[in-house]
Image (cartoon, rainbow, N blue to C red; front, side, top):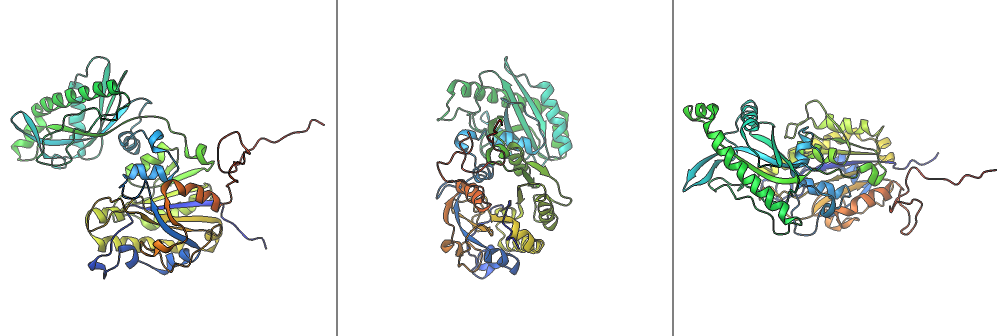
Length: 444
């Protein structure tokens, strides 16, 4: 009987997976405390190690970390978080448009400075945000030669889209990312490649912000909120500027047809940006009570028609930012329960990855630059002698300490798609054997 071999890849990301040992879990990390037989089976068929997404000590943002793990050169291909979140929200952007993430906020005035009182305007409702954003669209006057459009999102959030000639997204946020601080002056970043374009955009953002404060303060809705002693949505805060660009698709880059199962908008945005097909699952959300079993089941179903399936869970990071190691441990346990869906037939034909996009220790509640544990279970790779999957055990794992950009070559090698360095079966400069090749035909 012919031995089966892995041909497809299931790439599972437990957001913010890495952690520290804590007293609430008897001196263990959430990953160590949650260990179960379901993941033990994967561990016995694979190797683990530690991964520096960027480089040691550098905390990555989630969008950047995913792009790096998917094999993208963020220095040259990344176009900013604003457009990626907009894509995740279903906002259609044209190439060249600049998008900012935005909040409606509450400010007070002190010596002519707008001081942020509430960055989320009391978590104003989506309906009220829509009303105020549409009002801004009708009232804001953009400097000649450019156009600004606000798109309402959930609760206090919106996207601000700026278009026009001679603009560069290389500007700072006006959001101070803290309450009790003044709104920041938008400025070109020091390393801006197009200084003149960045200066022009910064000036536009500052003018729009001043106009928005004036217009919103006069709106009837805010007058009613003030009478009801609710925080007024009397300012805008914008951040994470980026210019929409078409990226090379994941399939173009790796010759793998890819799908995504994720509920978090940022992760759906990343998947859309690289051309993955994005699927919904009933009961799935970016919270601790997401439908874990349903998402895992959907991912396995998609492996019948896709070469690569990206499965994302946000709950681990939610618990980490809340500094709740018990909730994080319980979420990992629930995820491990869903691994009972992975039988020998799947293990024989699929390379399975479990990792995080960054470390978010519960004692700090923020991203750190520590490496994340990564487990790769595959019949196409060596297994190692480690006993269970964890941050500490990964130190002596067979994968060693790798970089985020190493993952895709390792995975392609596990499904026997790589070729020897220097081999050129294709005009493209790639390190794998493409599915489609040009063959010599004899005319006899």
